[in-house]
Length: 370
Ligand SMILES: *Cc1c(COP(=O)(O)O)cnc(C)c1O
Image 1 (cartoon, rainbow, N blue to C red):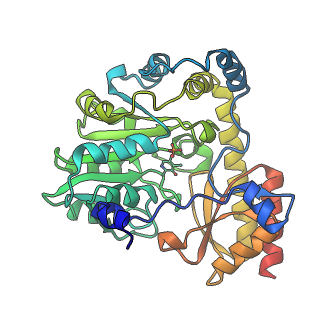
Image 2 (image 1 turned 120 degrees about the horizontal axis):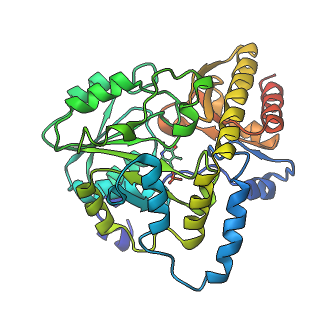
Image 3 (image 1 turned 90 degrees about the horizontal axis):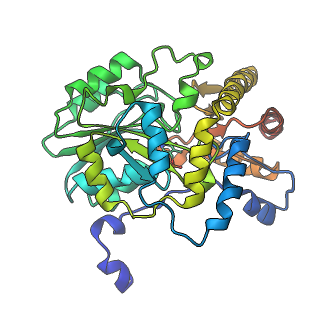
């Protein structure tokens, strides 16, 4: 161990950094393939609303200025949209920011942070970085087992993370189950409902009957925090902007550690502009539902199993050779996401792209499996 590593906190020493999906450039460089589709990071294949590009143009002249550190305009728009007070909002460089802030605010070394088996990979990283203890409850048919989570709460539990729907599994919890769960959790435990894929899951065409909007419960549960992002349905992953909604006293604490200019001026302008273009979101969500049907139907016809998902991605069981299949797909110019690091060595997670991108993937998968 080098002397710097020896001095790092125990949490940092045990940290395994988040593995992002392989960038398109890297694949082109290393594998020499030109026609590449990236279906690895749950990005919006339609890109952002055209209104975003116009809003960005208008901001270029002001790049020498610091952004509005309070994000007034964006917070005002979000407050109106969610029917909350501006004081309940914490803006982030992606929703990753508030997810991390809540742990930094409430969790001391040795405290417990709870999440499910197969839950989003950021949660163990944030927990480990705080030198806290991760309490990982067994999944139930790939989804969160709320009874197991309730039973695992101890006096040391500070934060519970629930992704609804979850990434990478795409599994979801209905309104009654989730609300009953939160009502059952002691008030000194923060319950974080991560709604990164809310727009997709709430589309009736995906069939998640009773899928809740947890922001509606903020007045019922002062210990509830809900996160949303502009990275997925809004197509702004590259600009990094997200937020949490919580009790104002919680937001006040989160905002104390928020770096003052964590959302840059282009991201603020883009987020505001994209909120106004509901038609664009509707188009993306409709495309997603249609492509979910197309891809899962094709996968079924190939005799493969998949985990039913209400996100913009699906985990396909390709068998024991998943790592080799992932690699072979790269040579076909298709980047998907291996999920062995989630304890899912048989699955590959595929983001739903444009129809032609999904066809490229399905053709490549057939070829590789043959
Ligand atoms: C993509 C994702 C996020 C959002 O990340 P950003 O920092 O907002 O880009 C949060 N939670 C889950 C479960 C995700 O899949």
